[in-house]
Length: 385
Image 1 (spheres, rainbow, N blue to C red):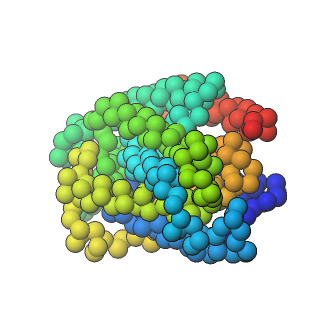
Image 2 (image 1 turned 120 degrees about the vertical axis):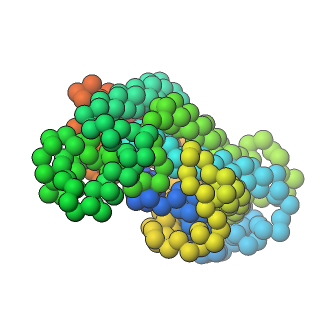
């Protein structure tokens, strides 16, 4: 199998992993904002994630000479290593459930805050804990800003009414109806600007998950649940590959990273398949019901969902490969991925555009605290065994 041995190689794996793991959430957010059901998106995402693991296992896991200490992927499949396999399976289930929960949290809490809170919970120490509370404060403040902007809307556009969700469509279907900007009451020349009341109305009208009128605690609860799941998958994978609890029979080599990642990804795919098939017929948070037939025929956005799954799969694989070379403590540097997601959230989606000064101050404070925590974590990893 291919083994990353140099420090430079490990750093390269971490940087690539950081870019991949920080980018796929933006794609899932984009699809939800365009109205694609998250159940459909995650089924495509999970399938591509599994395919990435299979490609890595049968390519990098088979390169080079196999030895007792570092057997290749196929050599380990029939070995009596089920205790370590169970740890890998547990890690895969936790990661998949955590990623599934974040997909819903993105709609309620926003891409930037969701990623900061979940990554902070993964390593809840010092500045990270403060970043969690600041993230919750940012979400609450931004929700208050949006609510204040929507108060300027005409009464027929108030949230929670049928007119609210159909206002834009009705305006487009009736050419005689005057199209006015809901903030300035001036004639529209195009799409509403990010951060305006009109922008939020347009977004709510198109997106799959309707969030207006919902309690802010729903999004925070989903985010916290996702963070707890994501905080446990890495220790489970560590136990699978290093066998710190000495659960393997005597003489059986430890799982190599590719074998552990293979079982890890199969378990993640299976739990995602089961949960999302259930959600097709019994959807969460007021989503429309779907079916397996509708999912199969829903090609719009499928390419992007598959691409996101490959990004996540290869990002996780690179993280584990780098962790094998530099230690999983050093691999914690990948927790900086919310900085990439925040970039996409602000630049691509216009999150927090035209927000209040209080929201901006909280957002900057959250990011500064998170950056400080990541820097401390990376500095301390060199002193940990």
